[in-house]
Image (cartoon, rainbow, N blue to C red):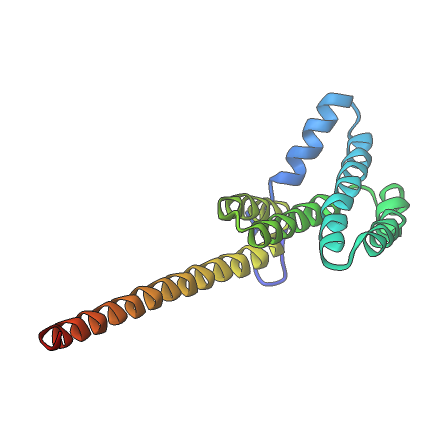
Length: 178
């Protein structure tokens, strides 16, 4: 694990994919079969969030077509047996599951689900280092979204306070006339 930028060994090895492969190898007593099963399981699970997002955005026919194309996508079908152990299927599943949960939480206004979106983005990072990009973008989005919500809440409160004070001034000045 040497890189071109440093003559020393790199110390970052994403732990999720080896943990998945180790668990499956322990379960089936065959490391080669564990790699194939990992890719097959996470490739199949990837269909769920992709179908869900496509269905919510474009309808059932487009979602079925999207899931069908993904189901026969060569790296998920034939690539498992030619390239060996790959970390793409678990990584893509974690990214798309995070996106599906984020989409659901915003659409249905269930903001407590955002925690699980962050959890899946974190798992994507722990599967492949480039997953940190999704987590950073997600974190920046949540911070910006919460800031806008707070500003709107304060703006409504200020507007109500101004309306109430103008109403009380109106009653104070009009009361002697009555």
